[in-house]
Image (cartoon, rainbow, N blue to C red; front, side, top):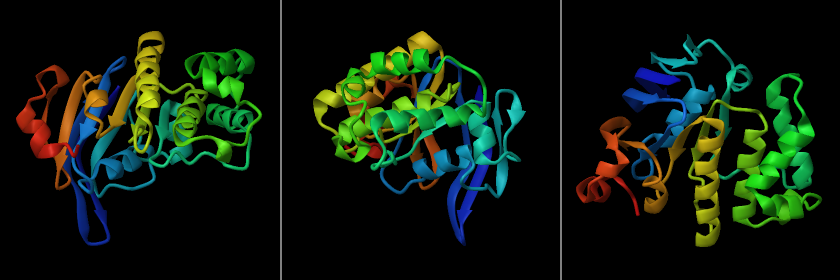
Length: 233
């Protein structure tokens, strides 16, 4: 589904990503771990098209997406929930969600059925449908951001620190929703996460350090040594 090969990214003269290789299969949850500042968010921004690599390749759905602008990558099936959520605080929950349909680029779908599906995943949003996004708690805003991305019908959903600053009970709700999304829709998930319990929900991990991939493997084999060295907890 997604294959990244030999990817390098610079900010000015700073070499941020160094020969990154990564792969995500359909129906697979892949987690990027690493301490702050190692390049995890930069990698997601490069995949979605907000940053341009100096070299390397990004293959999605069997085609290179490097020539495509971000909106075209989204219409091809990439979904992205950035760090900080970035919902629209002065729009209602329903209005925020409706904006998610714009990713479809005019494709006709049953919008009401799609909305009911995300309300089933995140019931709190149904009860707050007419509330302003800015009035929601941080955890509720995160649920709204994920739901909005799902309304674009992604084949691969990228989540950047979805549990950051969120109370434990809502973290568990988001974990459960992510597992349901994969089980019911068969989409892939690329997850940047620091929360160890959430990390272990993934099928596979890549550990980053100084802009490169330094360890990878099944999360079932994630050792304490790797956790201590690469995961900020």
